[in-house]
Image (cartoon, rainbow, N blue to C red; front, side, top):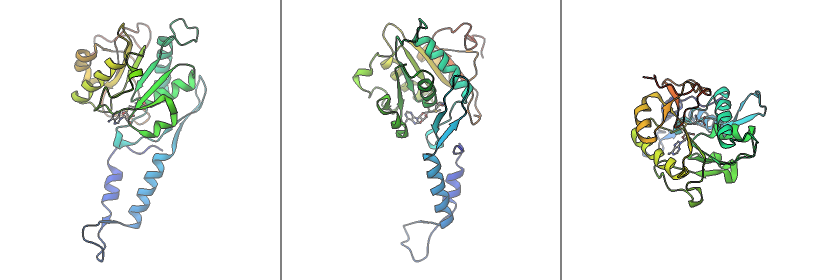
Length: 246
Ligand SMILES: C[S@@+](CC[C@H](N)C(=O)[O-])C[C@H]1O[C@@H](n2cnc3c(N)ncnc32)[C@H](O)[C@@H]1O
């Protein structure tokens, strides 16, 4: 089970913080119940989430969502649709031999499904959550607040860049846009941006992307309207560009 994307645990734990009379006044103590709740929560964070084997095969194990890091994983249908598109873009000949590399900015589910579906595709996951260090050399620690603090070898090295920013703020998208420019090839790369509909105008201004008809979904439903934006028209795939979108 994923950790719920709310402050429930926080309330549950902090609500039970109590001071023991004979303890140092400045040192709050957790009750046994709160300690147990905290222990369970931390254990849950370490436990992988399993998604079913679908067409294309392969069980995909994901770490549990951590609401403190704004983590909401795609459902399987969404992840597989994105993978299909990315594989097509990166190997245009359809020969299976990858002609380019993929950068996954803050979208670990996409990375996991991509490697399960087509392990030969060179892909790099840029992520803040160090649990994804499990992917070895394919993992690069990334903090969007330092958008260009990345290894020099990654500069302009990716034919396909996919980004799913953790926050819906202008500041976050501006910084992610800097990272996209750093990673993309000067002659042009395919960009897929997954974010809230509310970012539509900013996304166009900063990254020249338009919304597609395809609607990404998450395993745990999100309250806000969520869209896929691309800098190319996928035409008969992913619902094409939805230029009539409000
Ligand atoms: C909205 S989630 C996108 C995940 C995507 N839906 C998926 O299923 O792969 C945002 C991601 O941003 C990451 N993140 C959180 N804080 C970050 C930071 N400061 N810098 C970069 N990424 C961060 C989270 O770990 C999370 O994976």
